[in-house]
Image 1 (cartoon, rainbow, N blue to C red):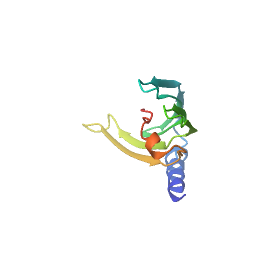
Image 2 (image 1 turned 90 degrees about the vertical axis):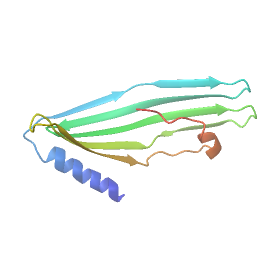
Image 3 (image 1 turned 30 degrees about the vertical axis):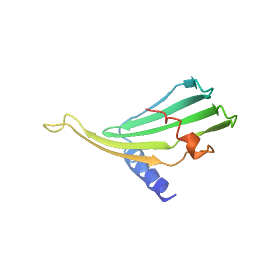
Image 4 (image 1 turned 45 degrees about the vertical axis):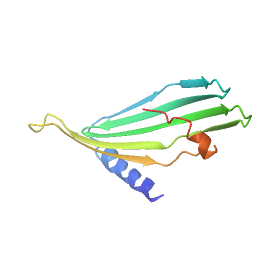
Length: 133
């Protein structure tokens, strides 16, 4: 829980501490579905809805990436398995110095927050790919 407190404090200081400039907030989502069928009658599908939230204020930026995923597998040995959960969340903080020095600088810090869960067998879970951003 301590990292979440630090992220909250950083967000408050960077974005809410400077009320003189406007904050831009954007939200983006989508729908991705994959399915497969093999020669050995192994079948499955995976559908996920990625969510990206961006916030910028002046030279500071923050981005949160996560997704809701549902996965079903039906192997040939009739051991069906499925899961529906939120995947791990990625938090990105950045500070950009553009057109202020002879060179542009970008400082960034990424955090992977373990918010996702799985109820799949480890061997089966290794078969699924993680959503790419």
